[in-house]
Every structure is written in structure tokens, then in C-alpha cells.
Image (cartoon, rainbow, N blue to C red; front, side, top):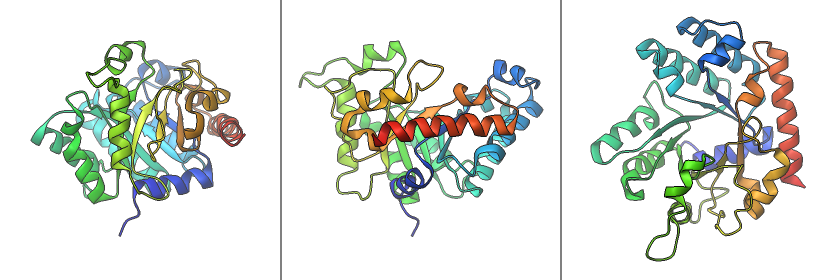
Length: 278
């Protein structure tokens, strides 16, 4: 039986450090690499990132939108990127933020979490704001496939607060409610559950939230968005060991030189390792 995503992620984090590198080939970044904003540029960018970093980072997080904008040819590049990364031993978290109900949610799940899908990924980001229960098809298929989910809980964008910090009748915020659901999904899992939360590293003191969900916390915001590795213990407290900090532009801006990409990733990885083990 395939080990669970939580088991595989814990092993990768312990062996390689917790750094997650985004694969975000937006037009400005392609241009800065001297690449055209077309499918050939998309493929050259993605291949370079994977070849440079797949043997050293724990996780890649491709942003699906930057591939989808090129239609079927872009999706073909995404399929190859996912396959090449996973073949090299790097876990892939597909950043697609899917969310819907019923059969539509099930179809989204099948696209990214069914083992024989060409886009099968180790985990998928999902949005729960049609109600946490709407994610059940994805939760069920993730369990069946040994994959995982990262549920948007406390995101780093300022607009997120109007939903995620809204207070329910029971006194819990919406974000805290999502964390509670995830803790229930992960109950009893060892060494770590497979159902994680997206929690921004830029949010400052989160001690009023129970981040101990026995699962991973995907933390965007390190680097270009203003957070630093040294901020992680303050933001995440006792849950910092399960944090998967995501860095995209902070690493990718050093391309297309493969050595420069490796150096940047190694620098962030070292800073993160030092911060979370202090």
C-alpha cells in the first residue's frame, strides 16, 4: 500500500528540509529569464526549475493557472512537469485551489488525485468556502490514493480576512473552523496527517488560533511577500515543525542559471531549517 501523503511529506521534510519551491511561470518572470511568453518559454522555464532543484527540495508547488492560460498545450507542459518532478523524488503540491459541490468537486478531485490521471499530484490545494463538507469527494479520493489536501484557512492576502476572520454563531471564526475540521481528519495519524491548511507566513502572531492540526501547514509569504524564515516560530508557535514554507519569486528570480537557482534554494532552506529547529 502506498504510504500516506503525511508520511511521505514528513520523511521528505526530515531528509531535505521543509522548503517548498513554487513553479510560477508568469509573463514577467519568463521575460526576466529571456524567454518568450509562449508554450516554448513555459516548457523551458519549468524544465529548468525541475532539473535544477528536484534532487534537493522537498516539495514543488506548480501554480496551475500559469499553465492553463496556454490551453491544452500548457496543460501538456504541466503534465510533464509533474511527472518529471515526481520521478525525481520531489513531492508535488498542485496549487489549483479547486472548490465546488457534488459531482463537480469529485471531477476536480479525479483530475489531480486519481492515481492514473496524467495530472496526479501528491496533494492539491482546495477552497472550502462552499462549506467544508463540499470537499468530501476530494477528502475521500485523497485517502484512497494516498494523497493529501491543503485547505485554505488563513491566507496571506488582505482580502481573505473578511471571510476567514468572520465569526460564527458558536464564536469560532471561519478560519478556526477549517482548522478544527482538519484536526478531526488527521486524528490519530502518525507521523503526521495528510490534510493540511494554507496559513500565510505574513500574518504575525496567530496564537489565538489552534494550529496544532496534526497535519502540515503550507505557508506562503516568505521572500517577495515580506515574511522571513526567522518569523516562522512567532507566527506558528509549537506547530512550526509541521510548517512547509513556500518560496516562489525569492528563488525563481535567480534563473535561468541553474547554479544560481540551487544557491538561492539552499540559502532559503538553510534559513528555514535554522529557524524551525531553534
